[in-house]
Image (cartoon, rainbow, N blue to C red; front, side):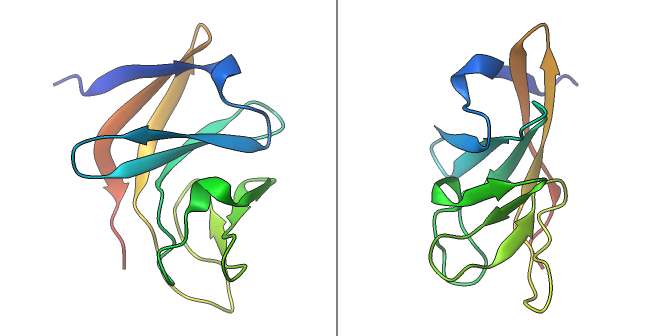
Length: 109
């Protein structure tokens, strides 16, 4: 089963920034790193639900704008000393198009 959908052009997501994708049931944040890697996380920090899409991207990490929790973009894992996890989604970039899999590959802890 092919669950990949084209969601954006790479150039639609600013470097070290994000864009959101809204479905009927959730909001997903797409993040682009300095070296053009793209990651997707549920747009809600596991701490207090802060909008991760409004956070600061640095390396392969995003910092929540509310309480500075740092979350790994690849896995959704919160980095120590804090603990938690946010849903991460599969992303691939082909020919400048960003493809998203709405199947979460990481469950919140």
